[in-house]
Image (cartoon, rainbow, N blue to C red; front, side, top):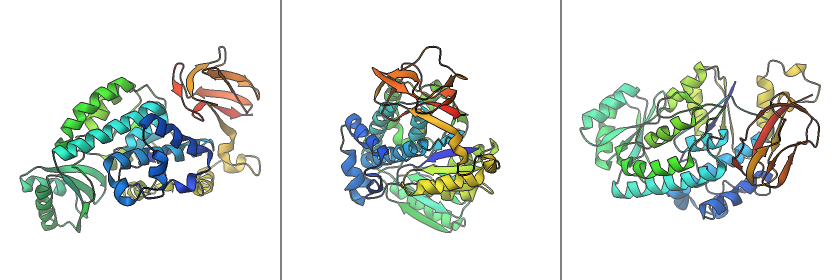
Length: 391
């Protein structure tokens, strides 16, 4: 089984959009700019490291970049059994699975970044990575500081992030070194994320999440808050709110995925940080990161190599090629065609639904396995509508 994972703030890089200019998936950038009221195009192409470090730019660009990669991967017909995202990446995972529409995802990320930026200004804080020390001892170091400092991220064995008031973080770092930490590495961030310093942002975001009304999903997303898989939309309203001031239990999320049978971890988006964490956390994990169009071919080979039945396919075909996605021809509200449901055999050109007034015609023949979009959902151009298995 495969899990798609999505990176959080800090993975952004200057010029990370350039390899995608001219690719069909670049259309998502223009759509995101319209929804956000921001020039995401310019941020992805021209912004320098200092401009991207701003929480409001870092979160939006990382979110859009990751979904752009996802869009390209979905065109290959590769789908996950589970999804998960690190901090901000959880919003990407929920958008990827349909719990949030693309527009709602963009709006929530913009609101979240603004709220976190303001909370960081009101309660100045910082973060630091503690390397080479057990989780329990990192927590001991924070308690010994006797000040406003907490564990913010359990990333991987021997890699924990602490956050809080600058002086308190420094003091906890000293105690961590005394307890055996190999290195304390300050992080270039504008606040103490995933701590009580974000309480004001949490209150502000709660109403925005309620307006988005996350939907039930078929591909579960493992939550940062409790490291459990959730498919119920109502549960995500409280989980997303709690996430802002709770530690990211990423190590535990990876272990949950492994226990559920996931053997392949595919990181989609800029960076590659989560791939390293998966290698450190899960024994014998197969990992790959995809950030550019050139890496899509590597993903195809990686997926084929992982399949024990790849040789059963017709020579020259990839295993994933027996499954196909039907995508939306435009943006609008989706309505399925009557009498075409799961198990229906369809021919090339059949209308399986409408997006607004536009017909959704399948370019493939096969058997409908399931609808990805639900009736009444607003979808974007190229958003997956249904998936089928070819004859």
